[in-house]
Length: 228
Image (cartoon, rainbow, N blue to C red):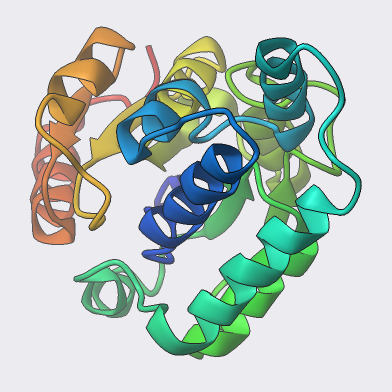
């Protein structure tokens, strides 16, 4: 039987990371916490939003302004309606691996995942979805979300392949004892991202879904185990 592929969502399925990260940088700068896109990617990307709020409020020295979070979300959704695309190569990869079990394990909420999947016409292709914001106590980089996804899908961690684009997600997959592929196909990828994912413990880092497919084919031919 083919192994379970666990997809992160933002930056791996939906090319939404650049949209959300830009909106966050702009919203933080507007309240006096000057933040660049690179700052967001280094300090906030791929993490549980509750954990990010704690970091932001520590930097601010107090609570976020009333209504700030709602305004940021509205800004992101406006952009999603007109700019959202899937990560390049995803649909072709799914077509070629239709018989492989798959699920989503994301730090985002179920509502956000569903919104974006509907926008992309991909809802039917991802029946199983897991949220680090709602389904587990500890989000990425803890392994809880990945282990929860594997357990629910009835697959041992060693038989899971994680596809991630963030340092936090890579660390979570590694901690879960899974084979972890870093993917840099999203439009948010910047110089040094590949090296950061490798440093976080990724088993491999690739720039496209064609390279993911080649990696899985090589493993299948060699009979290499997926887990550590």
